[in-house]
Structure formats: structure tokens, C-alpha cells
Image 1 (spheres, rainbow, N blue to C red):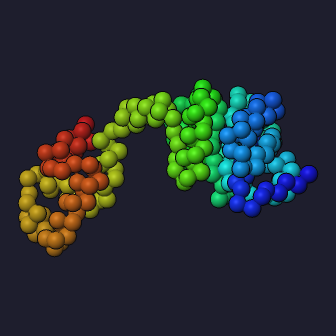
Image 2 (cartoon, rainbow, N blue to C red; image 1 turned 90 degrees about the vertical axis):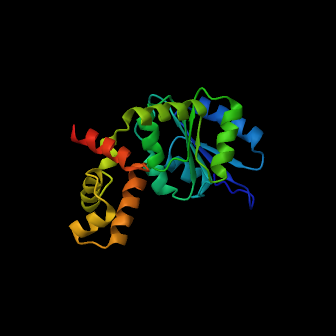
Image 3 (cartoon, rainbow, N blue to C red; image 1 turned 30 degrees about the horizontal axis):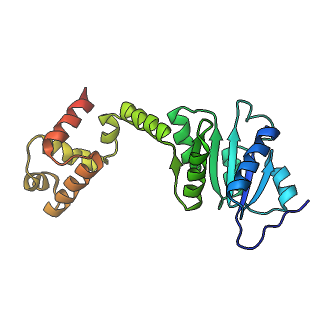
Length: 218
């Protein structure tokens, strides 16, 4: 059966291995997005057969404990197949690093299975408007994860070899003119290096630079 939406109406596809839950989500979406065409499928081939190769505006990928069973599409497969579609992952609670990895792979929104209807609708609306969406609880978890995993050494590695050389001279107390003379570079070039070093490390003074360099050497 080929499905053809009315002109100007968005198409949503739900990928879910559980047919009953998939139908329930479809009913909920039809009630709240009456102008949209809602298609439910287990995997990409089934959707293509039903929708006649119709590219969806929004893909909702529901993840259960068994979502990796044979035939179920991966995030990368969905992204490759529907490059221009918006993509929401909905389901199991995930560790912060997993959520971050999903967003890096092209996911536009993540929604926990514990989210209520209003949050789901907010997520869909945000994603359809070209924004990323992450629930408040998951945002807090990721924020704490980033704080815990952040180290000065990682910031130091952002610098190029030449910037590290200039940074070493700065913490020794040398002026920009002295560094220019030492390296044979123009004074303006040293000033540019200094500004880039501060910007990359998120600092605004040499004292903070000394702290980072000292931690890096330990």
C-alpha cells in the first residue's frame, strides 16, 4: 500500500520493534498533529514499501532493550537513508556519553521513556523547527558529566606546537616584545598567538595560564 501525503503536510515515521507500543505512539501523534501523515514501521524496508520511498520529515526511533535485533535500523543507517529528515531517539535511559554520541551521529532530539506527553510534544515541535532537544534531567546529567570529565590537560592539547612555545615564554614572565625577539616573529604575530591561546584555554590572564601549565606538567 503506497501512502501519499497531502501537499504541504509533514510525514512522521515511527520505527519500533514493539507493534502495540508503536501503534499507541502513532495514535498519540495523530491526536496532536492532525495535519501530519503518521506511518509506523519496524524497519526501513517496511517503511519504504508502505510509503513508496517517501522521505519523512521526522523520524522517531524508539529504543527498547532488544532494539538491536536483526533488521532494526541503526542511527547511522537512518541518517544515511534520510539525510534531510529530523531524528528523535525515544526510549531507554542512557548514560551521558551515549546520549552525546547519538547527537554526534546526527540525532536532533533525545526523549526519555519517562517523559510526559507535554515534553514529547515540546521535543517534536523544537526538532521540527530546526532545534536540538534534550530534556532538563538529561541536560543536567550531561552537564555534570562534562564537568567531571573536563581536565586542563585536554585544554592544553588544543594548542599548536608554536602556541605552546609562546605560552611557555609567557609563563616565564617574558613580554610580547621579548618573545618576538626570541622567536624571530613579528610583535603583532605574538599578540595574535597570545589572544588565540587565551581564547582556546578559556582564560584571560597569564596567572591562569601558569595554573594550566603547572597542572599539565604534573
